[in-house]
Amino acid sequence: MGLALLVPPAPWSAASRAEPPRAAISRSGLHGGADYLIEAPANWRGGLVVFAHGVQRGPGAGTVGAPPIGSHIAAQGHAWIASGFRAREYQPHLFIEDLVALRELFLKEIGQPRWTIIYGQALGEHVVVASLELRPGLYQGGLAECGAVDGIGIADYLLAYTAAAELIAGVALLDARDRQTFARLLNERVVPALGTPGSYTARGRQFDSVVKYLMGADGAGNDLPLRVRGLERDYLMSMTHRDPDVEKEPTPVRRAGSTLHIRYRIDPGLGLGENELNARVRRLRPAKDARSPSANPVYAERTGRLTAPLLTLHETGDARVPLSLEQSYRRRAVAAGTDHLLVQRVIRAPSHCGFDGETRERAFDDLVAWIERGVRPEGEDVLARDLSRIGLKWTRTLYPEDPLFRRQ
Image 1: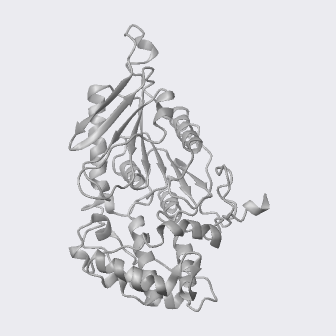
Image 2 (image 1 turned 90 degrees about the vertical axis):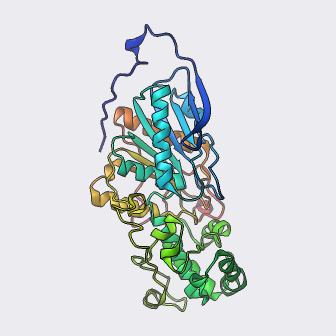
Image 3 (image 1 turned 45 degrees about the horizontal axis):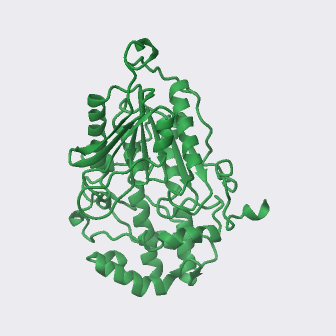
């Protein structure tokens, strides 16, 4: 189903030939406590890209950087802006506002764009989708990669992952009062009990099977070797500490996480049945109002009610931000009747945000064509029954661990 958008005339259009040529603009500064960058080419065609970067750790304000396809955006005649954000860590409720403020600065100092695309990576994908849902009309399109497309679903996944490790390892991880104790339990007790990717114990093989289904990677070309590559990087990093008293947890995203709705799966023949797993695993509730649509809308479950086109990119073996988030958001969009506004592309890889430049540039160009000409791009069905060949169209080079590599 196509989407036709009316793009109003703008001051830099052919109708204003009497105006002198516009010079290229390159600015940096501080706005609202956040560093920013603004780039607009001399041949600005009126498009604007607002970039939301991934999570940065530590105290203080974030560091600003250009979008990974900044030069391509400018070469196509479009402007881009980026904010370092006023803070670090996982705080999309702040970052959405920082980008709105920076866009207002652009409008004041540079001019009114014909359209605005919000483009995000990882944490930035939470910013993208929440912005599209909660601020309809502000952005005319979204481009999001390797990120939390399902919003608070990323916290649910990480807590579910940790609770499964706790049960299967037989270690009360979620009772740890501080991060130091949590880290010590991981290294001294969980790793010996489960092993590590590629060297699992019998209980580790149970955990790996559970994680496979939590990742949404079953049948997506993610047999054990490829999944091991993805987990090698994030195996322990994905185990998340949260204060045992969730009302005392200071981090908004952890306060909002929940596993009450998670239905765990595990392959048969591993010595742990699905019913037993679901009956025994610890269930984690969110703090009071932490994911309330009225009190904390950015951390509430996403609705899928898109009002502008969204194109996403995701890797099959990303263990940090799993493909299951794409599947969950597709279900929400289908339920909301807006799935015609969602195009998802999958790359067969165990990486996180490891896309090559051509993949990103093609996605951006296709999104612009969708906005300007109503040409809906190709994607694929992340909910298909058979995902064994998913991503072949968008994967430029297969990993040797990919089962399809051996069939080439």
